[in-house]
Each structure stands twice: as structure tokens, then as C-alpha cells.
Length: 281
Image 1 (cartoon, rainbow, N blue to C red):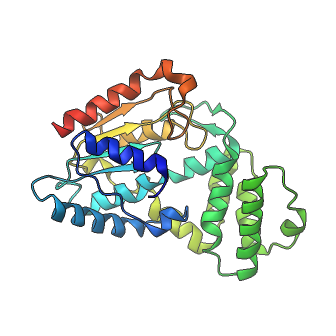
Image 2: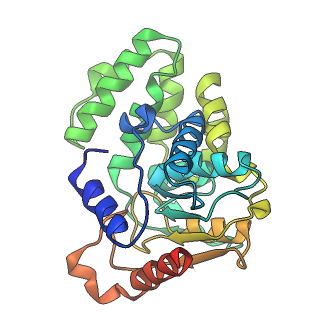
Image 3: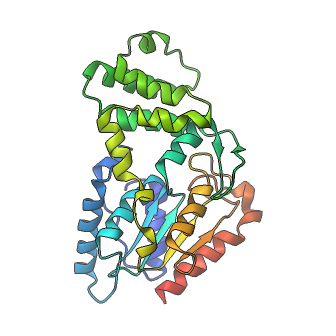
């Protein structure tokens, strides 16, 4: 919450007439999104309602935070007491996100042909770092954290010695990360250690009846996103329903940041801002 970009963003929302609260959620700050974060978001919403009782609260969730935000909203009578949900670079099905950052392949809903691009290595090693602590084996936990940190610093870092020392649990995670064939991803996910697999399932919005959401949803996702493919927000809109969820796909962004080099593609971004201001009014 002390990131200067987030502070500037919060101040911009405040100047636009919103009462803004930025919660400090430990798991998200440590890049460990969890289904349990929904309880922290519930507490933040209650605090916001206490500070501004004359207004209905809304949630703006960025990237992986959209998972806990949707879980929280579903638990609040399908967001009946909320003014809106805004998701920036979010996801619908974690399995498809894993498929993308390991193989670079994704499909739009209903499509049978894979599309391929070069994913950002950050997503892959963030996944390892975020989930290594869930392993019961301390040795594998430590080795996977070292491997992920080394590869986050240098994508070509030599990890051979550490890899050779991994036990069965650590190898299951590494097998998934090393795979490049989208067909094998579901099997490799199913083979993950129990605690990790359970967390993936609990955090996955695809398991929820999202069509029951009762508040407006604005989805913003870059077509050039190399962390989470834009197909995930397309799938989210379909799962929620087009009458409740508006989708904007600008080319002026990377994952969650505006890129000055792509300002020619800012039209969709402007329309999303306009839709949010309309909800404010």
C-alpha cells in the first residue's frame, strides 16, 4: 500500500469524489494471494462503511487480488450491499492462468485453437514463491524459494544444484513449471501436493456461481498482458453475464500499468474510466 503508484492512484480516485481506503493485506503484500484474504477484504469494507455510512462501498482489485475480491463479494449476499466491483488484469480460472505462464498458450472461451505468446517469466516464479511455503517438507520449501528468488533476479540463473536436491513434493511443483505442453497442465495440477492444490481450488473464481452477482462489474484487461491473458477477463464477463459486467480491452497497458509507448490505444481505457465515473454519479 506504500507503493508510490498505488498512492497516486488512490489520490486520483479521491479527487474524483470517491472515499478511498487502501487495506494492508499481509498475504497480498507478500505476493501470496489466498482465499483467506476475502475475510480481510470484508473487514476493510465494514471499516469503509463505518467511515462513510451514506455511501455504498465498491471494490477495485488489481491482478491476483480479484480472486479474493470476488469470493468476498459472493459472501456478501452476492454483493447486494456494494456499488461496484472493478477488476484490473484479473482472472476467472486459475488453471488457465497456470497454463498460460507455463506454456504461453491460451484460448478465448469457446475456441478450440490455442493462441501462443511469450509469457513474462515473473508469473511463473511468482507462483513458485507464493506456494512453496505451503509444502510440509521444510527442505523442499527452502529449495523452491531459493530457486524462485534466483530466477526472479536472473531468468538464466543456474539452479542445477538446488533442483537435484528436490524431494517428491518439490519435484511435483517443478514438473508443472517446466512443462511446455498445454495438454498436460490439468494432469500436472491434479498431481500437486494436497495443501497447494486445495488452495488453488479455494481461490479459483471459476468454482463460484458468478452469474448470481448483483452489483455492476467493470473489467479492464490489456490485450498485451503477458502475466494473465486477456482471455481470462473475457471468460469472467461471460460467467457474470454481459448485462452486469462491462469489459474493456485496451492496448495502452502492459499488465496493470499504462505504457506511454501505447497511448494510441487509450480509447478503451478512457471508456472504462467513464463507466466508473458514471457509477459514482
